[in-house]
Image (cartoon, rainbow, N blue to C red):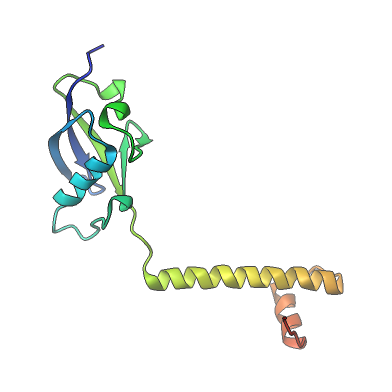
Length: 146
């Protein structure tokens, strides 16, 4: 096996197959530093640009790299070729838009409420019902929550 290198040539493969780099990084550089480099070099014409380091996931040798690890710690024996270029895959996770967040929260709240009412109906009436029965029960009952 080869000795430990002081730096690595790394290129970042984007989802569309294009690359950022290659660029040389010291073995002591953190994964967060790599992500900051990706943010600063992100192609302007690409629409799905990450906003922060938290929006970027780096994958190397099938593993998602942690921000607090160094390049040297993440190096795999498979890609430790002297003078070679390591390819890391970039995954961008976009935060949900405000409308989507509200819709998801409403759905969760609605589902929890319906589940609660369903369980309440079973307790009160001793019946197991489907959604239609819950709707009918809600329409016919005068409920007051305190």
